[in-house]
Figure (cartoon, protein in one colour):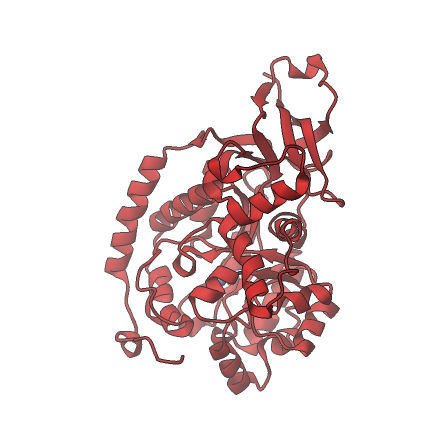
Length: 450
Ligand SMILES: [Zn+2]
């Protein structure tokens, strides 16, 4: 059996340095690498025994990278509250009530929805990492995992849990599963925990994933606890760096943007979550002007209600245009680069573009879908516009991760989706039954003007 996959006669949105789009091209995949992107005919010796996909009427894109992700089980549950109250009354009680099986089925359901909408890599902060790693291995997604680490009194994960997860899981599933050090956020952290996270990351030779400057409530708490803004204090504790992914960063001032720049910290911009939770609009134009690497994330199904990164791409353009009254901001190729190359660069991966030598994480988009009408032939600008402003995850026909076809013709190849959805429902109800809400948050209500 040949190791090759050949996608013939397709439109290749390469996301290379020139954002080149190649029409009528073939892609040759050998094992988990792309070896050739060519408009010439493919050597017949390669096609013999290979899996050949007719790419006519399709566009091949690099798989999308969801740079800030939480596996989730409780979409839509008690999600009417602002961030701080929601976390205390719903999210933390729910992830405290997880058991290994609930986490596994949550992972399966979350990753299935992501693969279905074209995401091939997730940067996932969650608990019960052996369970979600097992889900990632089985379902075929590329998963960078970290624990939800906080100070002990919050009854979440510890740095020891995260170290153990790294030692047992990092590099598993043929390298598709990696482990970073995760820090929930500063309101649940002490100086010692933050310094410990950096020491652990350095000792293990891995990176850090943290929420920073997400809400005004976080800024207030940080000032009260530490006398510093969150990014300033993270800098003081050595958290920032080129191996650090900071999620949200809605409320960065100029000095904090400079700290991100000085340290080479990567940013995950999550505009849908920020809007839903009433957290504000991140200063992405200033971040880009400062030269920061900004990728995109959906955050969690609880604070987005969809894992579709196509929706996130559209928001990542429109929200800034509306906010600044400036239609020149966030042009379509720039947004698509955020969802592919920028996320991949933040994670240090060889994905995010369709060029020879890159890892074969590729999605095929059905250009016969009605949202792509009208479409001018051989016109890159028109295609980019549709991909960012008109398409959604239902346009994804085929998903390839690490040279393996995990969805084709919208059918998953490695698992029974019906069973996954049924078991996720079952475990959601069981987890809700086990949730213990702290009494002071049992009657949390929406605060006007919060
Ligand atoms: Zn988050």
